[in-house]
Length: 115
Image (cartoon, rainbow, N blue to C red):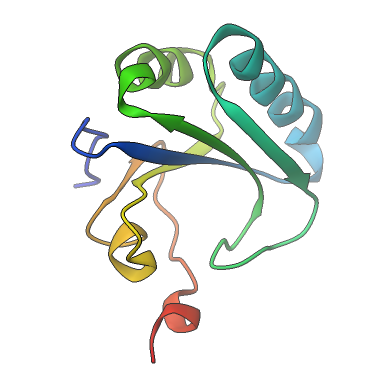
């Protein structure tokens, strides 16, 4: 079973995953999140970046916003899959043990975090 997001860390990233057909939907969702919440909205990447196997946009936020933002994302994601993970300084743990999903989980490209 895919772990549901829990508010366990001080800082978080949410990565909205999308493709060519859902680009505008993801762009609108990230802009809305930035307007409604204390969220830093990253670039909308129309290519795979880092460990992410899909096009993505990163939202950065802290634990104070978690309880408002995560239910809102769940309600408004419109079928987009979203990786949510704690930001602890350990990238491998953040993208594995500290990771949870809204929607379907994807296999991440984790080799970049391994020595």
